[in-house]
Image 1 (cartoon, rainbow, N blue to C red):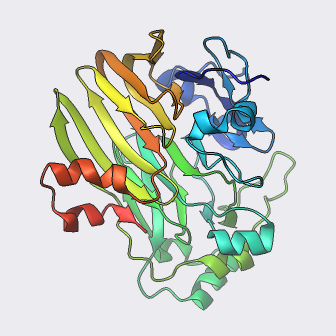
Image 2: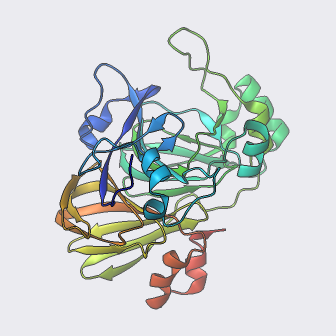
Image 3: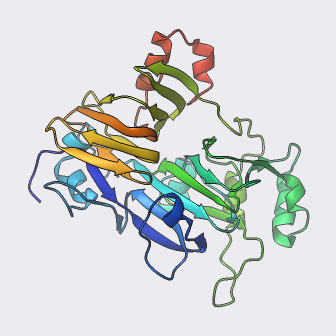
Length: 356
């Protein structure tokens, strides 16, 4: 593929059939799912192994994102990557029709040494939750590795060692590596994460595959990386300000991604400064996205739009009130912090949303 000018690109998702999946994304996210299968994940932005999202609109319609990363890296991500560097981000919707497995993700160093992979820091924005839906996040204080191992092996006493809480639409949960977790039944999450699928499954609630066999567990590796003293907040309340009638909420920033929630009533301008791409995922509503070329892209609930680093300016105009999750890469946290500092938010408050 030859080098071409970039623009706001609507992405075609990659659907993943899962034992615990369902069909709720058809109703909540307007997804056109493949028939007669249970879909657990919709990979919205992916350059991971064979799972490559493609452009839907404009002159590049049909182009796989990995080719754009290879041929237009400066325009796509704002810099020329190292020869061995992988694309930094993966985003997906998760439909948990059943309780997911109890799992934990490793940090980069452990994943590289033991699995030749990247680690997996992630976060969740709750798009939908049925009444009383819950998630598991973390271990009860005082839980020891020996007790936890025994519970995982026997299935006895696991529940009392796990911390869980109810969730509702609009909740935001940051999930650093090492934190034991499971997404509960009846939710749709937008998951934002490192470009990795590195997961250690600790317990699967005695679930069997269609062939009657259990899914593999990774107890030894999982316990190696489990953080038994995790103190990060379970649920994050963002820091908000109003601009031209729009409510902008800064949720979290780490070296791998920064996340904001846009609740739009009027036109919103995105300026990448040519430094990083931006990803917009519509959690609710309808909007028009325009790039510097002037072409309008109509997006609605469930759509994901990739805004390249260059050209740097795009606008989002809500057709009706909408909620959009905005993601970008900001290792220094400057882009995340500066708008809050300009509006007088104390550094101590901002630092609670920055994970270094």
